[in-house]
Figure 1 (cartoon, helix red, strand yellow):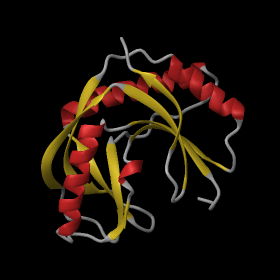
Figure 2 (tube, rainbow, N blue to C red):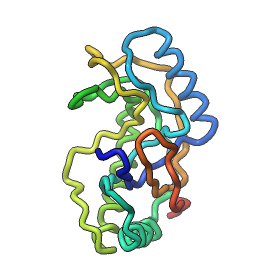
Figure 3 (spheres, rainbow, N blue to C red):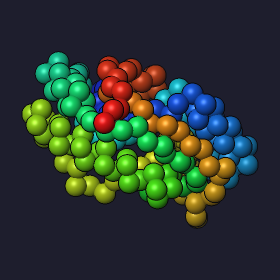
Length: 182
């Protein structure tokens, strides 16, 4: 990604109590020195629902269409439980992530499907056929883990959807938030 490019995406953020528990779990995992790498600032912890792309600038029409899609969401709040550390294969470094339990993947996938449909209706083509593996990135690791490492489960209530913009190495910027409601 170009140095000045911005990423635009929809995400859910851990609630404050869960964010503290995630920080503690990550600190314990990091201190075990199982892997090394570049650790993510806890202020940027999130679970991506729909990634809209890396852009040199954020066109207002794209942001407006994304906002329109976000405003169409109708889903009751739900809980997500993160229960293990795992890695994904990466081009240069392996993303080190907290993974959800299988029960949490169902409502997250439903949220993603509904959002993808709303994006299409709003005029933003979104390919949601890629396999969705809900996760919260905690680091870009120097190597892969041979297997997932269990952590004390952390449960967070998902009560809002957030449209975020970010630049590499900077805090994410919340462009809009929507409370989930049936």
